[in-house]
Image (cartoon, rainbow, N blue to C red; front, side):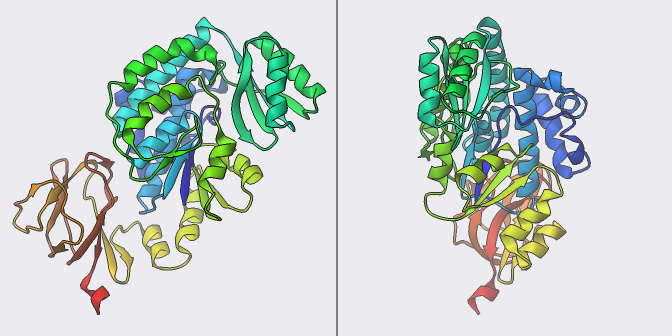
Length: 407
């Protein structure tokens, strides 16, 4: 199962309303605190024109994608790989554990502000070309003899170009002459993923240098080269390059599905990426989770009508299978694992080694001032939350195999 995360342009007025009464909505206030902005008002009350501003569209798309991701994680469902389209790459890095929640939010704020300023310094636009090959789209840009480039390789027959308004207009006309069915303006505020974004790069590099990147728990496929990357140290350079380089989403989808049929889950507002996947990898099972009602379809896809289905729908957070259990967080906050299966509250630092036999009441970790203790006896099979990861009440943090499995 692969999680994909949408980018700028997926935002819609009022997109946050279906989530207001869901427990995962609490993330909105957390992002607002980090960003120093009222993100809830943007998600609930901002109109399309206000959301079109780069600093707004990126922040609301990132935040709502995290809300949806949090709701999925509360069900105990995790991906085997991640990828994100442009801005969505930052959400993918948070989802994979490569970026902390707060660091991710800070980077998105800086990126949005930097790109907004670059767009005001060098005004640009974008247009989608439909029914044209990648080669012909590139040729149309070259023949336009101006500042226009391919910005997104989205799907077979769908390419986005970007540059100055005049050059994009000329390239669009040439594309029609070369067989493009449609040339459609993209409702964004600049020429993203082109050299016109160069003024934003220094500011973004500085921000990237101020945060910590960890090795992701699952590989994240990058926009720049459509290759999976498992080393945190590679990501500052990749994200810096992404700002002025085309998004190779068509190639990314092919890379993610190279091993055969699987499930691609779009996590966040809209459904743009699911539409692109239908055209690119039609043999894959495709799901879009944008509103709470979509969670049931995801649970069905993962667990059918078996134990996982019942567990997820009940939000119990304890019973996983007949012989397996998950330990859940009793509170919301930052998870820190501990070593040692002590039941008297004493423990060492670091995570308890996988394979350790735990007794009922063993200390697994702490969330803020709350202890996380297992109500089950069994062998620790793995941790489901990373050290320093923000978890919510009821979110699984560890996985045990009970003695029943040995009988």
